Image (cartoon, rainbow, N blue to C red; front, side):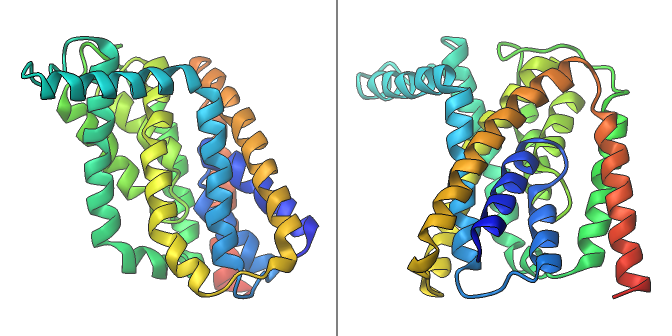
Length: 278
């Protein structure tokens, strides 16, 4: 893998992880058309996820640190006999909702792992996923939501968002777009829905890295590409941070439908290429 390829893949990973255009679909297409092969590709993809994880921590460090401290306070309450008191304050309740949302994502990911893995090698699956992404984004902008915040949020809302995140493991279906739509379907306030979507990406990305890393590095890692890998991670982190900030504004301005046109066009192009050219 060259330095140029690593930078391009890092840029695509960072932007597409948080913009509603599907990072998995874009990376699969990049690898297909750039013909990037070799035993280090899977390991490189895992490390790119680490880069995007950095961008979430940078963008939401204040909230993440508050959640970490509240988790410690929760354990203290449990060990002193007070109980978890999950509704005692908004931060503690938010932490509980993140955990609840992660459960359906993990179940869907584990049960459908073989199916999802096969779909990554299928251009028709990727193209169809992109068309689905465009459609759900189009309808998301037309939803009437109840502007619920964390105090009003119920476990059913978290389960819905987590299930939508699980479905987005399919290549071509956007994780950020799906989780945002799940939040809007549940009536969450737009600003809170996008923040919740990004915060629940942390356990999702971490879980993906933990599960994929052993297999990735068993296949081997060529230390000759250390420089390209580091460049890719940095580019993924920086572009991911920019994408997060941009997405917050896009959701606030109700301009998600812009990405509908992009994913529809790309999805149609992928299907056309597969059926008429490949």
